[in-house]
Amino acid sequence: MDTHSVEAIVIGAGMAGATAAAHLSATRRVALLEAEESAGYHATGRSAAIWIRHYGSPDARILTAASRGFFDHPPPGFAEAPLIAPRDVVHLAPPEQVEHLRQMLAGAPEMRRLDLGELRARVPALRPGYAALAALEPDCFDIDVAALHQGFLRQVAARGGRLALRHRAGRIRRQGGLWRAEASNGAVFAAPVLVNAAGAWGDEVAALAGEPVLGLQPKRRTACIIDPGEYDCADWPLLGDVDHSWYVRPEARRKLMVSPADETDSAPLDAQPEELDVAIAIDRMQQALDIPVRRVEHQWAGLRSFTPDRGLAIGEGHERGFYWMVGQGGYGIQTAPAAGRLLAALVGGTAPDADVVAAVPLTDPRRFGRIAAGSQDRPA
Ligand SMILES: Cc1cc2nc3c(=O)[nH]c(=O)nc-3n(C[C@H](O)[C@H](O)[C@H](O)COP(=O)(O)OP(=O)(O)OC[C@H]3O[C@@H](n4cnc5c(N)ncnc54)[C@H](O)[C@@H]3O)c2cc1C
Image 1 (tube, rainbow, N blue to C red):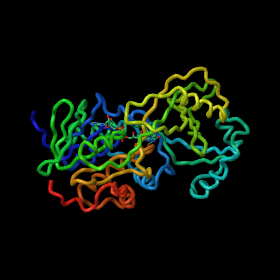
Image 2 (cartoon, rainbow, N blue to C red):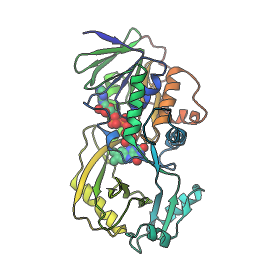
Image 3 (tube, helix red, strand yellow):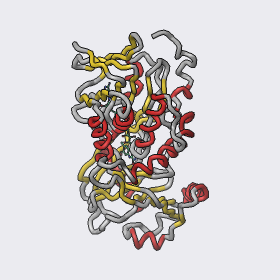
């Protein structure tokens, strides 16, 4: 079997792998290996597609903010239509969550308290008496996930990179200063740099390569689509409780996506929705919104994968040239442009841009202490 010699191998062609490969391919020949028949089959194709500034771990917030410029002004030819569209986010606090929302308001000056009458005029389905306090988070967006993902994959191809679908990396080893990844079909790729962007399978891929694992935990999240009946929800904000036990978001103009915001531990697998989680989503939504649900039109689940401190892991691991690009949790889409930029700087040994440099210690995979320090000089 021939060995394909490249300058970087990226494992996993979800959003993390696509942005990593796109940024690396500006200066390197890249092979992007994907186990499935299509790129984006797992978490990336199952996202709710929202950009929210005040969301997630401190490093996620830095990368979210640093990605904003890319979403506003992607490079020429990156996508045929805008990548984002404005979507307000409204946080609702039933009486027992009011203190939480007050604290949130105090920490985010651009967020404003929303008059409940004003909110009901905009969302007539809101049940009087559900919320004791509401706050509007402006400057949030729906993201066109497919356009973003395809844009990165097109960049990879345009820069001479190769996307290899149905190539599950099954054996990975380091030999003579090169990483050698053998795919399930026998193809072998060799490069001095290997990026682990395998999402929920991140620890599995690390173990294949003989790297200490980080303790990644995939967590299942469920979503379903319903018809809001008499209501025209196209311009509704994303609405949910501030404790994050449910949320709804307009979908394709006439429909509503509903989620119980679940986080059920899972093994890495092709996640499927549980009927109970769908029922919980609808029940919690109906406590706030007077929307009869006659049938669920579509339901799905995906895995959001978290490191032990819920921050991302972007950076070099134990062996030279092994890079982590995992732990995107619930923010892998909104952080993708800046995360790819940061990874490329770390791989290239250049100074990270000023807008992402503060994320470097926060995303360093060595912070978990499982990766032995000072091992970089070990012979290959
Ligand atoms: C319901 C839901 C709502 C969400 N909402 C949002 C949101 O509003 N905003 C946001 O920013 N994020 C959101 N997310 C999170 C976001 O979808 C993820 O953070 C992101 O998609 C993770 O991308 P990834 O590339 O790391 O993972 P994945 O998309 O899962 O990609 C990993 C890929 O690696 C491949 N792979 C694994 N092992 C191997 C191997 N050995 N060889 C080759 N390939 C391999 C897999 O086949 C897979 O395609 C949501 C997620 C869910 C499930």
